[in-house]
Length: 318
Image 1 (cartoon, helix red, strand yellow):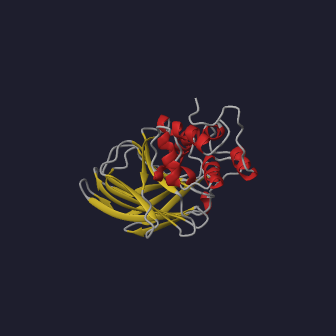
Image 2 (cartoon, helix red, strand yellow):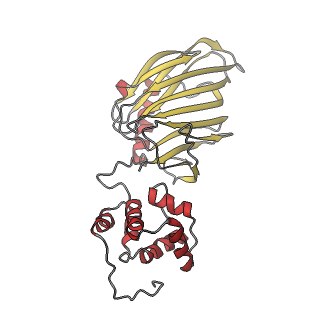
Image 3 (spheres, helix red, strand yellow):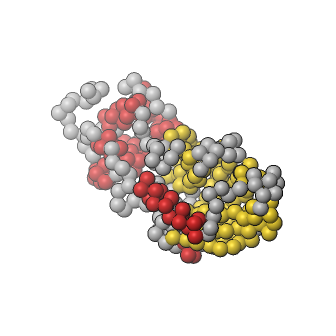
């Protein structure tokens, strides 16, 4: 039941521009247009919501109209229904947009990889590793691992630099196989591999359809059990379209992991968040908003001790 004094038979007058936004979406564009059409500052919108018994912060309202967050909790959905009346919108006009996926044709919001694509990539990776004669046990335990990801001016995944600290748990280990999974539409044959410190590039294998690339990094020394080793390498990509996330999968629990994503000043997202998955088939969980540093144009996460599964950072474009 709607609150307030508006009579049920009164049809709200909606400006033409706002009608188009409500018809075509997405949700954040329609909400922003509706607030602008009524000329209400967010503080006033918040005040009106409290009269409906709904408490929503100004920051949350700002995130909603920027597309940095989407209302999902029951309290938030109550707020959206109240906003339809406060902003004099037709019933269900905003709620309907929320029920849609946001991956509509014509938007440039990158989609996360599907379970099917992840499973296919897993099978491809196994074949590439077998082609490089990789043993099931690499002989290395990760003590520390840092990924530094750069997003370019076209919103593309421009490059990824990795720093590893490992310890050998068997004798004779002299290499590491680094895996890069490019965004959909990438050209793996054009992705460059750079051995930056304490290693040199060996054989490289890739798979066109999945965007998987595996590079052999040679240590020029044979480690003994218990030896530690530091090395650094990078993948120079930039061959795909807009990127919306970076994920790292871990087959086994291990040491510390840190991920930093840095954005070009010409391509700053409207919001960033971290997430985890127990497996490709599992739903994403552990979502947490990340503060984007304006001066450094970056966000990061730190896992003191990684667990088996997937951890990543996602972001939203305007």
